[in-house]
Image 1 (spheres, helix red, strand yellow):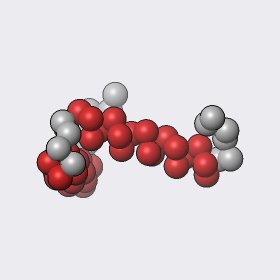
Image 2 (tube, rainbow, N blue to C red):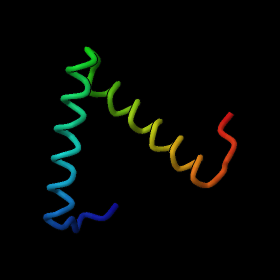
Image 3 (cartoon, rainbow, N blue to C red):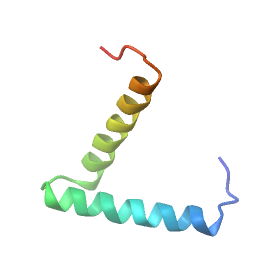
Image 4 (spheres, rainbow, N blue to C red):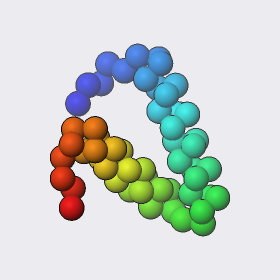
Length: 55
């Protein structure tokens, strides 16, 4: 794991965490559930871009 984060990496992570918290609150789910949901969407998006069958 790279521990040499740049300030912009930290800024992006803070913004993403804020958005995930807002999503969780809006949808009455936990932060962990929100993270899992968005992770699945990202994986699905990557697989679609690479034409990988995710079924």
